[in-house]
Image 1 (tube, rainbow, N blue to C red):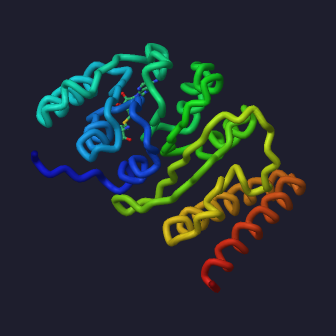
Image 2 (cartoon, rainbow, N blue to C red):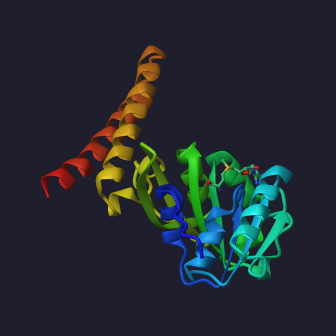
Length: 232
Ligand SMILES: C[S@@+](CC[C@H](N)C(=O)[O-])C[C@H]1O[C@@H](n2cnc3c(N)ncnc32)[C@H](O)[C@@H]1O
């Protein structure tokens, strides 16, 4: 069979998939992720779903090219609307904004009720996504940063627990990356520090000193995590 390599961003998503038999890839586009997972024996069955017909056509062509029609089902669906909860063990939602990812999860209450494992790779608004997960009693089990095509991305695995966990003040900004510090995580945290510093320019000009000092505390805590990694 033709050799097939995922980019590092999608490979980090694939690495978060557990020993599950069935996954759904929401917003699959080219279907590279489910194709790779099947070809590498990580899952036995996958649903490649997308809201748009053109990506689904692309996915269909790729699935045919790799002769995987028997193990990957195509599904046209807005988020998880058309997905059958009992057909999937894990759900991947990659390459979309954090707000869209949150809205897809919130429109499918079975994700929480059936405690499905989520693998999420937001392209933006990661703070909103982590806040959504926290507010809705999903626990981030693992989070990993990765360099891909010269940029840094984060990949989150999460599951509903029904418990409001106590989290640290920097949690919306770096999630669980403090547990997994490596070069990409440092680059990601440095970017978050820059974002917070920019936010603080606004806070200062609006004379919002509460927000300013809160952000300073967060910045210092993130800097501490980075320093501990670099000293260690
Ligand atoms: C940038 S691509 C990401 C492709 C792939 N998941 C990746 O990470 O490389 C985003 C895909 O999400 C699809 N999409 C956007 N909104 C969606 C929704 N509400 N439900 C399902 N798919 C959606 C788009 O059609 C597009 O194919």
